View (cartoon, rainbow, N blue to C red):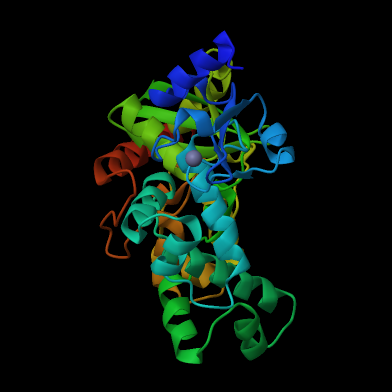
Length: 354
Ligand SMILES: [Zn+2]
C-alpha cells in the first residue's frame, strides 16, 4: 500500500527534483534498475515503482544501479560520477584503443553527449585522458628500469613512432595533473586583491596547490574547478588571510618565496626546472636556454619553456624570472603585463634591500 511519503516521493520523481537526490532512490520492476529522483531517463509507470531509502536496500532487493544517473553515490553530481566512472574504465583499458563509440555503448550515452560531459567536467577529451594515462605509465615503467620497448608495450602503445611523436610534444607536460584531478581531496581557497589583480590561492592540508591570477573571482573559481574537478573546494578568506598576506610580501620582493610550503605534483623534468627557478635570486632573471643548461639538458629549451608555462603555483615558483635571451619578456601564463609588473616590483624590492 502506498504511504503518504511514497506519494511525495513519486511527486519528486515526476518533477526530477534534484533536492531529493540522496534522500531516496526509486526502483523500476519492469527494467530491474534503480535511479536517483533526478535521473533524466523516461519516467516509469507508477505501479512499476518501489522506493528505497538507500541504494544498498534497492540492491539487496535485486535491482542494479542505473548507468545514467549513478544513484550509488550520494555525493557529487551525476555528471561528475559518470566522468569518474569513465576515467576508471579508461584506466583499465589502456592496452587497447578505446573509442568514443565503445564508451557510449558501455555507459549508455550518445558518444557526442558523453564527450561533451567529459570535457565539461575535466576540460579534456576521453582520448586526451587515455593518452595522458599511457604517458604516465610509460614514465613509471621507465623509472622502474624497464627498457623503452617493454615500457612502451606495458603502457599500451602499439608502435614506436606513435610514442615518439607524443613524447616530443608532451615532454614537460604533467599527466599526473589529470590523475590528481580525479582525487577528491579537500581544498581550501581564498580570493584577494593583489598588485596584479585578483589572485586565488588554494591549499591542501599539506601546502599550496594552486596560485592563479584573473580579472574576476568567477574566472578564478572556474579555473580551480577545472584543475581539481573532484575535490571539495571551500572558500575560506578569513582562515587564509595570513597566508595571502605572506604571499603579497613575496610579490613585493620582501621575502624569498621558497619558504612557502607547496603541495604540487611534477614530472622529474618539471621538478628539476622548478627547483632551479626557486634558486634564481630576487631581482634577477635567466633565459630559457640558461635554465636548460643549468639543469644539464642544454637542448631542451622548448621543454623548459613548457615547464615554466605549466607551473601551477604562480609567484611561489618564480617562472616569471625566465625571459628570452634577447631581453624580451617571453611568455607568461597570466599575461605579459603581470609578468612585467612582477619583475619591476622585484627589481625595486631587491634594490631597496641592497
Ligand atoms: Zn537513472
